[in-house]
Image (cartoon, rainbow, N blue to C red):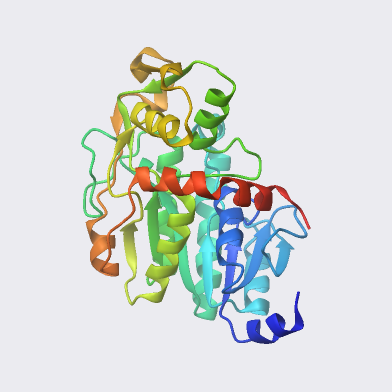
Length: 314
């Protein structure tokens, strides 16, 4: 690092990111590295691109979480760590509870202890998908163990840290493994000339992950706290999303087959509209929220630079 840059960075606010080696954590490192001091918490990593410091910690261990937060005293804690696989949560509900509820509670307690602004990442899966365009005030009704555990995590976080920001979201983008996102799924398959299914009856308002990070930063900077939907401004089916990817990336649209998910074996994602209403977010920030199409276009622009960054290790 240039010494002149280091001198400037002394005055920057400090963000701590749990799950720093994961999909959202890695993209946070890429997006915020030049503007904040970044501390990453990860299970195994000792260094990560974009992070000034990285500490290995098991977030289920409350004393360890509290000790490291009290020692580093971050201004903001972004809690991205989760067991996010629906299948993994269905196989092991106890593990889902330990990671998505207990660990979230531990982070919230530590955050409250030092007066940090906590941003807890939640999910659209707290709803059942029977209605769509859900507002923050709509009744929750999770359809999976994952959704149940994430809703319980929301409640645990707000009990321990009432001023937390709970961000319900669904996102896509580039990941370190290249296999964590529906964007990567479609791009990889279509570039390899592989036929893929595009579900016409499963709708989400998935947002480009780099847009998500910027919107999170904007909410943190505002005076608003509580539950908020940080998602794209419109819902699209998986099929519609795939068509958008093929058109933006110049790939063959004919390889995407429109199918109903009810005809497949994905029980937890069958025939649902999980789109989120983002009116509260737009009102808080006084801005237009990006669309999925705009996210796909930005992902196309970012691909070479961002994939190279995410896949390197210091």
